[in-house]
Length: 222
Image (cartoon, rainbow, N blue to C red; front, side, top):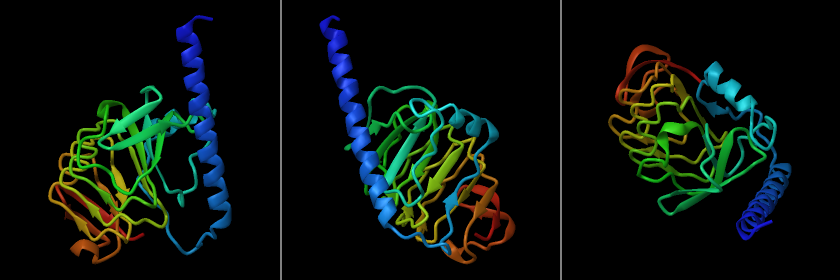
């Protein structure tokens, strides 16, 4: 074994050990947290192609993502991006136990700048410690087909053009915690259906042909 192979083997062992420690801590936190059966789960509709991709996960053989009470924000890519994805001051780490190429981080915010490698991003799970989604965060992620919020979400704001030009994103559920969405947050996206409480953000729900921050959608109640 040459030096480069030895270094790569050591790096992978370090990543695996860190990921296992994160999973153990998460599982213990979930075990101690009582679930509220009356609390809705907020998620986008996932296309059949996206679901099929998730079933062929890397490292975990299709292991499902953590429960939606998870503090982890997860970025799922269709291709490997290395052991880490650096986004603004946040560093997401590959978790080999999760489907596809999933990078996780317990973060308090989603940066107001475009996510790295937008063309390869297919799904996002927003953890329950993230309070905001910044402007342009997922702009032009044309393969992004799934956006899931934690069941007890703390997201209060979604920035301008945060999901603009996400043509594969056809529906999304907005958590009741969201109190502001900036102009054109969903402009030129594939959005056609929004699940939202009636009157939230001044939106009528249920409704047909509703103007929704850059998109024209049908709305439905949670």
